[in-house]
Length: 304
Image (cartoon, rainbow, N blue to C red; front, side, top):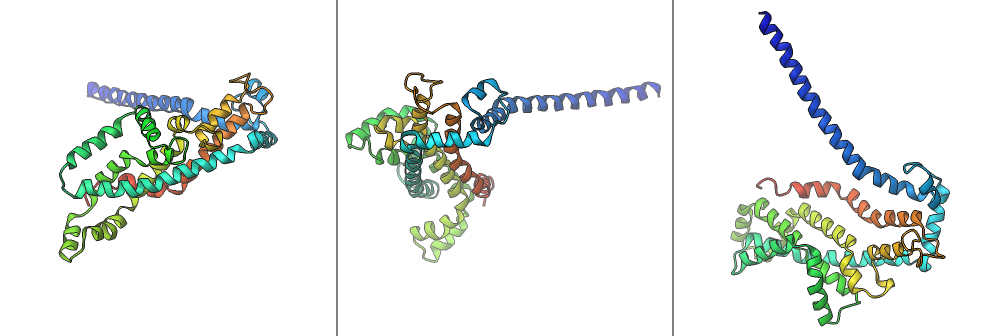
């Protein structure tokens, strides 16, 4: 009895030690995530509240003054006669135009790949998957040559048309329609005399709202944050989207380019504020579409 009674407490202690070790590992992982991901965001939000000198002398996570935010804002607005607003407008035009074309092409393409059988279907699906996993930078050179062949370099179409090709969106729609759209419903509609267009427009599209929202969100975010292609095909500053404009702001900051930034009021606080302004549209879209995004992510998880 004595031996068994001593074993039970030792087993309980080992179990408690194991639980404590697991909790400790989780805490350490969360601490690392906090250091590498959350703290830089906090620094970015607080940076415009300080002057460039205070950013170097004060604590990185200290708060400065709201007056410094106003000063940084006035410097940004006066930079090249308010070109920041032109960059934001260009990003909205490029991203919005590409989004419309993306939805107009990705949704029918995914539907056709999932629910119709035609010659070359498997080849198209394979090509879609291959392009989806390819680095986007690897397509910039052939896209540039193609756009140059059609004389589109330096126009808005040189951004809108390439951004409209969204293979990941096609694949998302394909997965949704292949797994969640009841085939019995489509067959019943065909028996009632519905055409293929009516099946798509009146049955498939209304049921696909969650995945359409998901494709729209990923397309908008990807287009808004794209840098490499606009940097190559747009020659003029007043055509730049905000991401390329941020690069010009960076080159006008004395901390990074003392020669080009001499005499300008663009310092580190102004650069931090411009980054916050650049990500605000994506943040707003995300906050207002959370429910649709969650529904879209769960859309293909169960068979309809």
